[in-house]
Amino acid sequence: MKFIGTTSRGIKAPIIRAGDDLVDITVESVMNAVKEANITLKDRDIVAVTEAVVAKSQGNFATIDDIAQDVRNKLGEGTIGVIFPILSRNRFSNILKGIAKGCDKIVLQLSYPFDEVGNPLISIDRLYDLGITNFNQTFTEKEFYDIAKEVKHPFTDMDYIKLYKDICGDKCEIILSNDPTTILNYSKKIISADIHSRFRNKDLLLKKGAEKVICLHEILNESINGSGFNEKYGVLGSNLSTDNVLKLFPRNTEEFVQKLQKRLNEVSGVKMECMVYGDGAFKDPVGGIWELADPVVSPAYTSGLEGTPNELKLKYIADNQIGDLNGEEAIKAMKSLISQKSKDLKNKNESLGTTPRRLTDLLGSLSDLTSGSGDKGTPIVLITGYFDNYADD
Image (cartoon, rainbow, N blue to C red; front, side, top):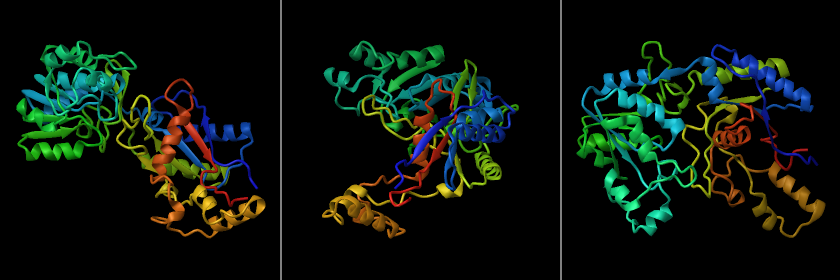
């Protein structure tokens, strides 16, 4: 029997710049790695490319001035309410600079004790020690500081209230509330800055009397004076590039993965699956941070990555159907059951305990963990054997 199953490898690549042919660079990098490690490729092996280098190769950048103009165009003058931004210098600081520049005043409503993806504004244990156990309360900035004395992220020591206030200057008022409708006491023109709950909150605010509500995916969803943009995600999924510039989520990713699949097939003779990935979807059990600050794990992928895993739970089978077998007899019986498994194992005991997630979310998370976010220099990930199972020889 084969002894090696799924293998995920980070593939090094050159420094990607705007205008680079990323399809050619990816194919060359993968094939160099295949040669170096003597890898045998098979149909349905996977090449994943991080969204960051896709966007860079496209030159999909915008400035805080572009954001400011778009906000002014869409919301006009006066006070703007901004609700539920994530607590992130990388993800939100430049967006906030642009919003502040595009309005007369901001009322910024932060959730507590965590933001939407689990970043703690302040330790929940500290809040309990201070007697704050009811998170339905609304606080002004002063009220919160009077109680907490200091507000620090438990891991970075960053005071996000101070940071965001400093970014906006005198035109900013900060409140803390987990009720999205609280902002209506301050403004009827609102930016819903959350990621995964934005549609629900926008609908709720409009029903409760908001005059105008836009979400982050509606800011820079078209070009401003030749800027980068993303028609579907706007500034969602963007990252800080410089103090004045954001790298946006990539465009035309479906076209990219189709071209990449075709070129890999031409060069290798193998029909591989391809995807673009961003943040993985997993939660840090210690820090409590849910990694997914992008709007989706994968904005584009080839058709072979559709769906969810259809797998037997080997532990369940080993304890039940073949519980009385051992050694080679057990191996043979297990392989037989896998070879004969149903094409749809939903709600079957044999699949009890398998992960009920989409393939692209699983693969994107694996790719994100493999490439990391630091200095590994591996924006491409090669995953082999992912669709193999115990019965494959």
